[in-house]
Length: 114
Image (cartoon, rainbow, N blue to C red):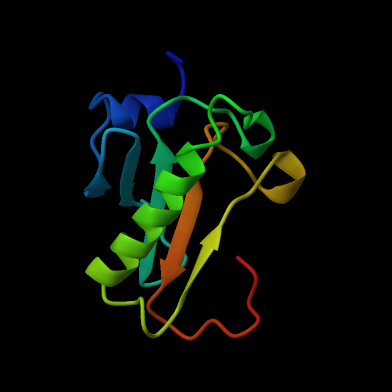
């Protein structure tokens, strides 16, 4: 999608601080972090939201979750804990309509909702 900011980041049109990449997933540091560790994990295929997952593209969820595990280990938060968050739709706070997950950690979050 030509006007999608995450597609532009994946394609290298907009710079990012890459954390992890495979043929299906790209992860980078959030430019406005909510925690000491705040990484966005996105599928390279443009899927606008969780609602757009279907039998043809749902396998990317496996890749996203495996990426989250690897990134948490790489950034030293796998043992202390982290959150993996997906906002689906405007009322949930989704502002970029390209499926993505926030991996946040590096601090005790308690019951704080991000």
